Image 1 (cartoon, rainbow, N blue to C red):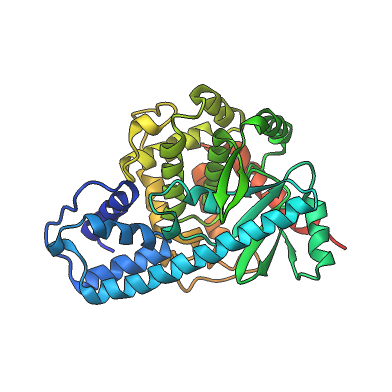
Image 2: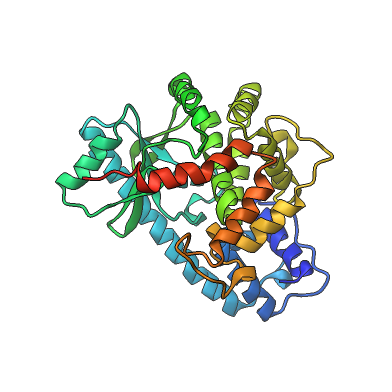
Length: 366
């Protein structure tokens, strides 16, 4: 995608995110341009956001009807998937709590609630964390019900249920440094009284306190950037979450959390991108970032990598090895380790160690 079309793409993202601005075009877009925009939107899982921007465009700036029809069909599929996902969340939550478990919904539909049209956010799976050591009990429940699941690296398990992919996590945050584990446990206890609830399908679902939800969402972005990359949708999640909870969080406490977990410098880069490229108002950020820092290089990496690094054109046809299903996996990880070492050193240094441990020694075995 050339620079002018990329600029249009990001304009459409901002319009869809915030429901304002007007589209500035130097020349009208062709049907081929719109199809390219649609392809990139799907690769970054932001096609719902760009579809939402159409309501704010002048008639002459809209895509051709043939493109809009294709987009509308996909939006219907996304809405149906989200409806099914909400039903599964509610059913599972009631089932878990009936067994005495205390589940927390991570990311996903909890973040979707921060969008103007939650049903248009694309959500890949349902992520559960179980308080008070409930992971093992939830795992046993799956075995008792003869549900086929797979224990995975990263101290998690996953399975499919009623057409929805579901993951259970032993750890609440994607912070890999073991030097931070005790701090994270204390943090979880400290903010337990500030946990929120979201009504999904007439069921009150437990969510993290806003400060911890931001840590969770942003640490998840960093985890994927350190390895193979991540798409724009996760950055949009962060932007909408900041915008929604900015009046409820303790700004100084959140800054300290980022500092104590060793990711504050990287958070500054993220904030720069959210403001400069996605249009998040600076007033929605909890604290200022260094004005002389440049994060365009990180935005370029995100742009190329697409959703979880699955669509990076730079590595098409590259060699696939035992390290990863991603082409040129070892080279990509090494390049990202070097990029982010300066900004989150402990996360970069400990990631390969903890990942390897979780995959071979720390994985559950019956």
